[in-house]
Length: 219
Image (cartoon, rainbow, N blue to C red; front, side):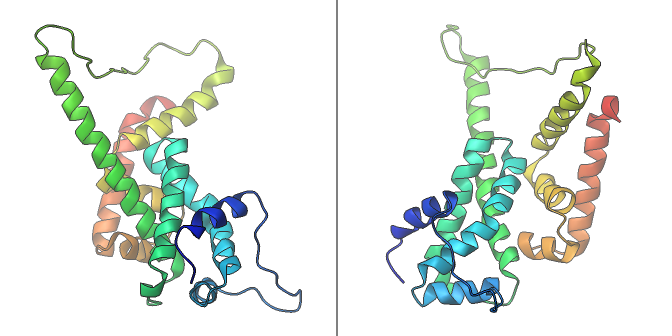
């Protein structure tokens, strides 16, 4: 397998549609496992096909987790870089989709925790700044005014759902997004998050209850 630096080129060429796996119409496409095996054998087009298959899914999933599209694109690319870099250690015990979602989930949760730490530091600075010269945390209270035009109701509803999901603690956010947005099974979510199915179901129920409370005005 060639150097990891070539992955950037693979990701870019796949995004622009210039890299693909040539498959004869009479030959069935390779499975995800088959593509990763071909990648290990030095077939970079096989890895480009994996990127093509999962790029949109992973980007959308991370966006739902972070509510930041540019960050989602960056973390999706980092996810594929890690898959490529660890290809030799990949085990076929689980579906490839489980493996890649686990990596993406861990990256998203790490970013959410970094954000939380930054917010705590900013808030501490804001409230303890005796000389009033510190740069405090920018507070963004919800706009509780009634909507002026019914045409915006659906857009506002979608935005409210995104904000509500983004306000969930990561331990509830990840299973909820995997189940209700990505439509993954409880079994696969348990494998991705490395916890029992009972814990997954409990956290999803808690997350749904939280969202119902947050979104009363839109239900």
